[in-house]
Image (cartoon, rainbow, N blue to C red; front, side):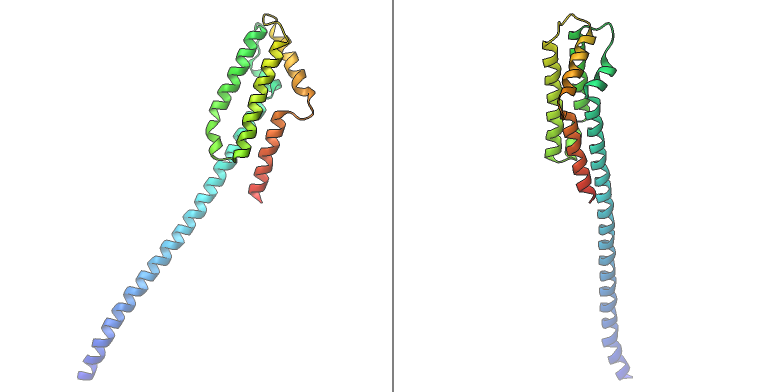
Length: 172
């Protein structure tokens, strides 16, 4: 009988230590597995946000192309000066609406978007200097579109290429 008690004195503490160790290790591995799965979900969410930012910036660039911009803002009753004011205001509002997208794109991509916007603004101001401010807005529109399309590569095309290249590199 004493022999059984000695075995129990040794076995019961050993079983308790084994059970405590087993349950601790099991919980540790479960938590690590949860962390990994939530990390993968977070990466997917981040990728979706980044892609959305690239989409929005591409849309912004397409919206500031003079052809598209003029279609949305020009009215037959406007003067060249009024059209210039509306074009610059529209670009500024579009840009401000998309400012937060810079958080999700590279510095180079954001810089190319800014350069495209600034170039279009300069183009509008340069075209305005070539027309009479009181003339019908159609004159400014014509000069602006001709000037924009006279170059081989437009600033918005270059920025869109930069965005596309980054999306392709993200996906591979």
